[in-house]
Image (tube, rainbow, N blue to C red; front, side):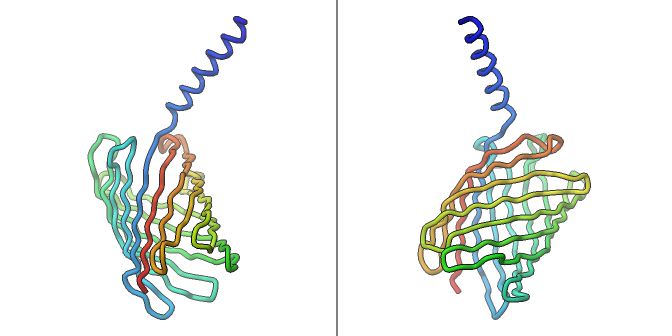
Length: 207
């Protein structure tokens, strides 16, 4: 009995220790297709991010998407944001990125796509930096259905983080899509704690 009790106490302590090694976030994204022409479109993007219930980041910018082939799109863009650093002060962050997205499978009820991006960050209080990201995403084509994705990040030192997301995607009408879900971000120890996040996004395409 004493042995079982001692094991239970160690289990509880271990669980508390693991819980302290995680952080809890929310990410909320809004995208509006502001301009669309044959083969290309411009999307205005914005996002708010909270950490433990307090605002940690706000950003806005634009994404240019060019259909280079029936299953291949080229992507480029720029974001400007304010981001809280480790001393609880907000700093300016400029991000430029480019890459492509390829449709691996497209059916009436399902789509699978892979995306590759290279990003570079300019910050006013830290050295500039870059990273490489690779995403694989599956979404259902019906009015309401699941959406799942995995994304992997690397910098010049190697593995940076990996994010896994699962949620529900709802096509509200012909021009608006809402998605809500859960994201887990496993990070390299040198950049911070692993993250759990509630994720929402709204995408508007009036074209």
